[in-house]
Structure formats: structure tokens, C-alpha cells
Length: 144
Image 1 (spheres, one colour):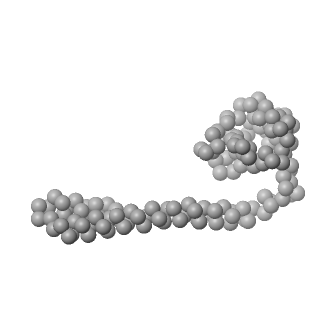
Image 2 (cartoon, rainbow, N blue to C red):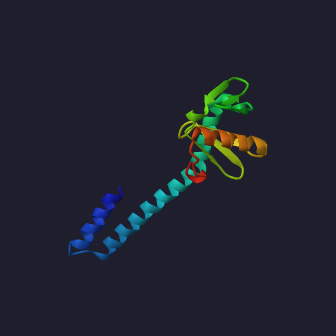
Image 3 (cartoon, rainbow, N blue to C red):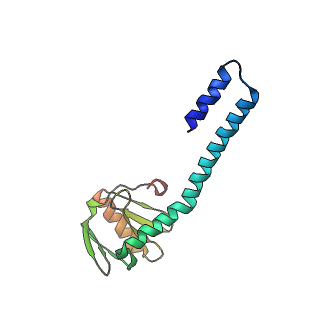
């Protein structure tokens, strides 16, 4: 859509017989299209992404139960009411952390969350040591 309006504006500018009102109208229309797209993307980020995330979480019923995470080299054991995962540490794609949480990525969109408020410092240190031993790369939190 934008390229059509850009072509119209370009034609009007370089035609030689450009009418000022037609050029102004074309620029106003182009600006309104760009503004509406920006508003759409902002609304999608502010409203759509959180709603979509909640919907996906509701569909994965196994994630509703509390997890127990244990470091048992060469594996990380993750257990909840319905499952037990004994994953080799090398199978994790990457890990990331900030002041509140540590994330263990299984893929680009699948990860286990370790909230630091419920994990002891000794556990976090043991987990980081195991991840370092296995050569799992640390990612920056904002780009994870």
C-alpha cells in the first residue's frame, strides 16, 4: 500500500504539472497510513502479545503445576506433578539471567524459568557451574 502512495507522490512531483493540493493530499494520506501502521504495531505489542502468551500458557496444562529443579551432573532434573525430565545439560540451547530470574532455553521459544526469589544462592551457583561445565552458552537477557 505504501509503495502505491509513494508512486503517486513521485508521479505528481516529477510530472511537471504538479498540483500543490494533490501533492499535499498524497502526503497526508501517506502520513496517515504510516501512523495507522505504527499504532497497529504498538497495540499488537501492548495488548496482543500478552493475550497470546496467556492463551498459550492456558493450553499447556502441565505448566500450571509447581516445578522442582535439581542439578545432578551431567543432567538437570526437572520434575512436576505430571512429568519427570532428566535432560543432559548439553541439550540446553543457552541460558540467560537478570536480577529476578534465570532462564534455561530448550529451544528459541521453549524455556524453563528459575525464579531467584525461591532458589537459594547455593543452588543458583551450582546450576551456573553445571551449565559452564557443559559449555552451554550464556545469552544476554534482552536478546534471549
